Image (cartoon, rainbow over all chains, first blue to last red; front, side, top):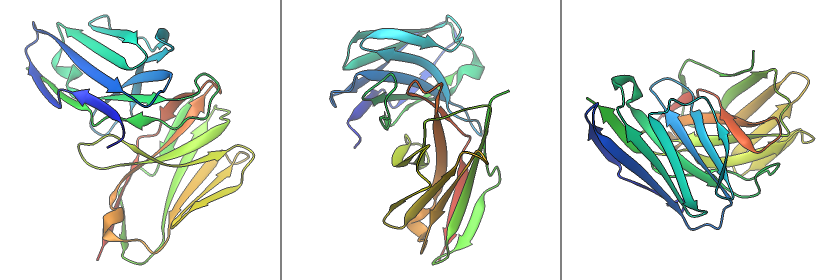
Length: 115
Length: 112
């Protein structure tokens, strides 16, 4: 148990659905991240929030919409996804961003399948 | 272009031997490098961090080296055990801003 909790663990959604992924951390960290992990590919950084403000958006399609209402919670809202968006979505948190050396604590991930 | 490369092929070794995994990077100037372990269907777990001014770091059976001239980090597991079987990821900070960029990982299999 890393202290970062993601729900749901598994999600199957149609291309016209709207769903949300949730991430929660009670480690007192000041930065939170969304990563996408596809088979045989490196983790891709999608979004970074520092002190609840988005500081990085790595050219992610607008069908992915993040929300960080406070330093403990992070959401990823999904709509009109494509089958190629099927992947493991990982949330992480760390302390001392920016310029810090904080290790990242990852959640267990949400396995998303788009049909 | 910027790249982080790890051994793309799976590494198979016998129990008790030392496993050595490689992480090479191009066009980055990281202040530190981290290693993570990832088991199937789970998130990565932090193992070790080494700073740019450190040559070597140890933690129990793990050892990491960092050569900023060669732009390479080596990750060693001594006296390996079947329980060490997993995918190992290296990660470095991008633009020294605390944002982690990951390699694709190396799958290690330790046979009894």
